[in-house]
Length: 487
Image (tube, rainbow, N blue to C red):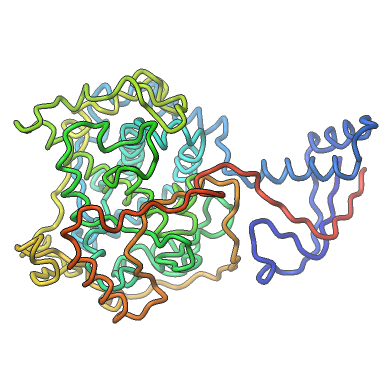
């Protein structure tokens, strides 16, 4: 049995300024000892370097949110064995609404269900599945149909706990019109909790994610080389000018070449939230992920309804291209390719109309003047009156959350660095608003942006995708003062 004593500082995607000094003894599994033994028998290899490589491989293994055999068995039992998707949903039909239009009682019922799924490990199972075989369901045509099935399956687990709930969506187009969107009421303890650092308020306070430390967020961070972008109403309006599925999804062309690629628009929201949500492998552990993707699915459903109108006259169930399927022609995106974790289904099965006919449907986005009769929304008829003369619904702000506070958990704050080697989400360039600006500065940027809205190509400059953006590069583990003893 190998025993590893780590002294002084271990820095694993954590800034050295915040890592605490400690001394700890770890009992390593047999495969690490076997790796050590093999290295001793290789005369041409430096033993110390080989042992360090064994340790790096071990730390990679234990820190990755890797899918387990139990996870696969869970998905097989829950969905494949029941042929989920071929029959009506066991828990019945449901209707999804924006999170701010739910009553306090209904909203807290949703949060209670998330809490149960977190505690029983099912949220973690779904988070790990989303983070595995990432290229099979991202950067290609399978992105939308795979996530549609994924969300419906998760919602089924929600309703097994409480059949009266459904998965809400988060319509961030209503946050876009706040001068400083990071001040939206959704980032209060009434909804998602704080958006900067580890979650310390709200229903998800103190939760751990795929890094096996507290879930972190970094909304509207100005430090990125390319400020992120929330989806707004003009983006959705522009999507409806197209008729074919391939016109709004990812193929072999340059990833940022189409400003109305729904996957890239989706990436921008992940990037805007930052933290765990900015890394594909860990994003599914934050409950915000599910409400973000429900809104992406809502937008896609609006597009599918548009396809069936006379000006398009396209059957959305069959509108899956046979070629030009993914970035770098990556496998897994063909219409007949199996869906990861739902291998009994093909990608094209995610295009079935029955998902939104028999399983779920959507309440429309809140509209003026009622704005869903929500106390957290209001109708603004002045802010973008040329493009939207009837007004737009706008979210209220953090200060408008007046519900009682829940106790704040004791948190260990680790200011980790963004880890190279993770599939990082980067969307289109934003308008420059961020949480470091004053409210007046952000208001001016928003005003200028709306005034320039006649240019359909403005504000869609692609980020520099060189370096680690959305690429796999080995994680760097820095272990200082390692003393190795073998027993």
